[in-house]
Image 1 (cartoon, rainbow, N blue to C red):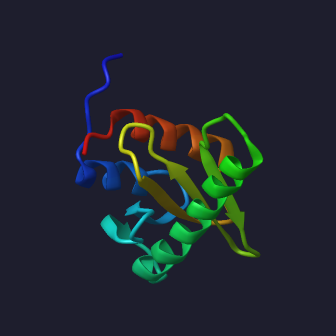
Image 2: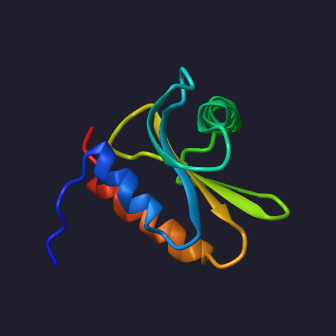
Length: 123
């Protein structure tokens, strides 16, 4: 199967098509600014800025700890929802934030689909 590239708007559509997704954004983790977003019952701009801190902190921990490895994603779980933060491989300094209802989605499948969008995204 031939995969076509996605622009940021197409990527948002793909992400929101993942079962249980309620919000998605592409974020610059240095500035915390949202480049694109879709859906959500939460303030994606506010959460993107705060999750940028989480991403930077984890990258710093890896550096200080001498971990010579790439970071793929960060999973944050709450009582009734969860968030996946995916560090983009082909766009340095960016991550995808995907918010889910906790009931229904398959975390493994969501991670897989995030990876597919990451590979196809062109910025």
